[in-house]
Length: 121
Figure 1 (cartoon, rainbow, N blue to C red):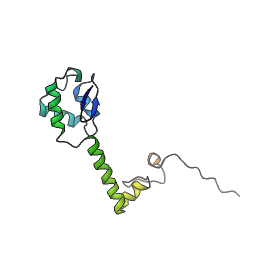
Figure 2: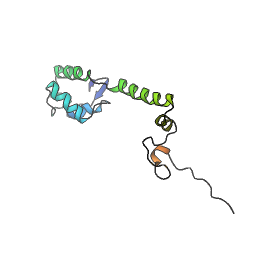
Figure 3: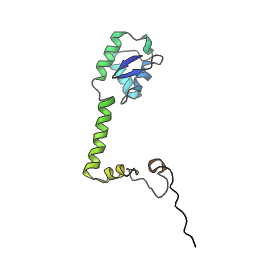
């Protein structure tokens, strides 16, 4: 396996798809990187030459990917929670953040139902 940005990318897939295994690189960014470096997007990772791998590693240094990106996103959420804004409080309570209704739906964010017993006569 080739190692780029600290990630082992699959050898048998096309380089265009393999780059998407790196956190922060989607298909569009992968295509842009390949166009900038001049590497053929249809070539398999196992057929890449060392020079091509070096070009790709160099091009990826211009982007925030993997651990740095995860840390950056985590710090942004922590900042929202620390200042106590509505978005931060909603994140802390594991509720939908972007104004969705919670009376019904929102099961993904709230978790499984906690059944409350009905009122006895």
